[in-house]
Length: 271
Ligand code: 2HA
Ligand code: ZN
Picture: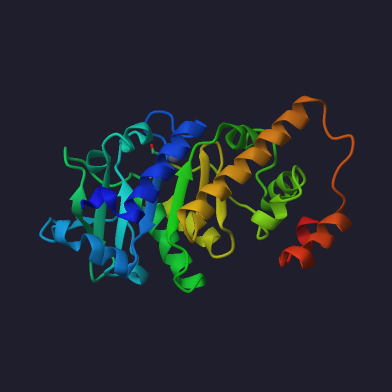
């Protein structure tokens, strides 16, 4: 047994590799974080070192005191995660104030957790609260079709949601709350973290204009699936627009018919 064999580490590494294979992680693009369950922590506790130096998170997350996360490293490449997890990802602990973190495992050749740590942790804090602790994964990627649409569609949550829903019947079932939009902002800081966290109160996915997408979910499958579904719908929309636009489409009344069989409530503002 080693940390790399733990189920949650394997799930994390597989997701990072899946994202790389999709083409969403050029160079060091994107980042992934997972809030470890208490029973999973016990599995790996023997390998963790709780004597590291506390470092500033750059944002206050009092709702996450004492939580332990598995996160990608700043400047690390997703394509390398599967080859050498210990060098490219790390386990961090949040202090009792929610102001600092320390590295307990990983980044064995040196480094820091993801440059987007404030956005990840502020999103985790909101999602932990609004989902009663169910949400555990935050995922940021740079999918090309979605980014392309942020140069063409109005940066408006209702327009983006409606346009993407209309590309495939299952879209409103997969993201019934729609998409939040963060206007262009400097990445890596507290300001974009606050705005992303605010949107996570309502949405499971927030578009970063001209940059990428942030997704939240209960586990690796659901969160990867959300990123995948949104990017696929963006690809379809890009193709439809390139072919001269829709000549027929999914009607508002058809969307309403999805609610009962799929157990979702679709806000009328998107219809
Ligand atoms: O380079 O994706 O947003 C990592 C990023 C920053
Ligand atoms: Zn990014």
